[in-house]
Image (cartoon, rainbow, N blue to C red; front, side, top):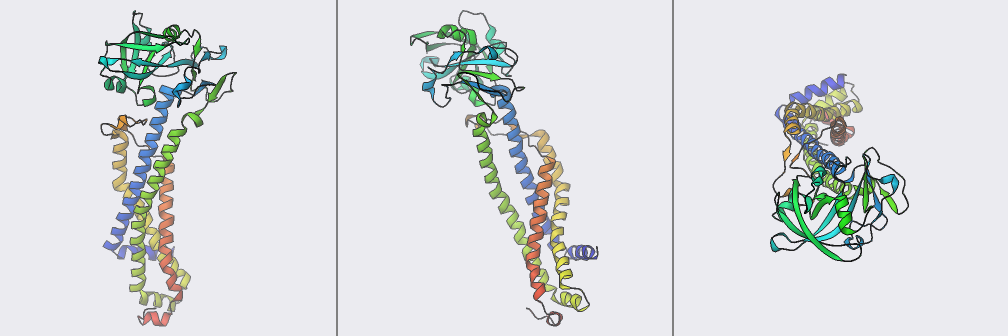
Length: 387
């Protein structure tokens, strides 16, 4: 307790030098929490949007289906098993290649059929119930913008059925929906499952079956393989890991600046207070006790930095968590699952871990210069001789 009181008194007595170090350290502390909060917020939003609008609790794929190889689409369809028939827990999806001709241009797309009454995904498939003569289709806002299509527009669609015969028809845009998930938007049109099965001559068939989020693990079925989050979110997980690695570099640079400032302060303090150190040792204080005082002084930088960061940083972080961070225009064209506004997420674990890292590393950096005290001769120190 005496060491803590002496360390605190010495720290406050250093005046402006102490508070400059504390401010730099608090700024590093705040930026680390902010950056991690943004990444965590993006991660949570993207996962929720992807689960709600694309993958549900997992997907059954036909054994020949490969989303990265469009040439497999002609063979990747089969009769939907009885266990996976459309209901509140499953939503079959039929995928095929097609071509559209918007305003005289040619655009290759994926035509996806889904049951309009499905409840597994949150996309507004109910608009596909239209009984018009043309093929009712809905598409995402990016797809509509890129092809200059609006509600009520007609566009010619050409496809190749299961027998290899080409056919074409007029499609009417009955709905345009906004989504943060580009995998259900870019280059895709959605139609009623039965309508697509009819024109493709694939009655009762599908390419995949999306399971409800209540079903996040299941056994494979004959010719149908279940894909869970570890597979469906693999690319996103890897991207988040890359962002975290990039963040570590930034955190290290910020902390390094604070560590250097504290290290230099400790070295200068030991140099200027040699007579005081020599006197303390001569009066009976052990070298270990003196080292402890200087180490506690350095550690207190971290404590004061956390307090200062909480005073001016907590309102700023709270404000951004509520208001969010608006993304610049064009971000949605990067192919990432990212919303127009990211709401940072600051967990208690994030704050505690960051505080512990800053405190521990600051203590270590503060201890390193104090090793010189163990080599001091008390007599020479009192006389002001530099060791």
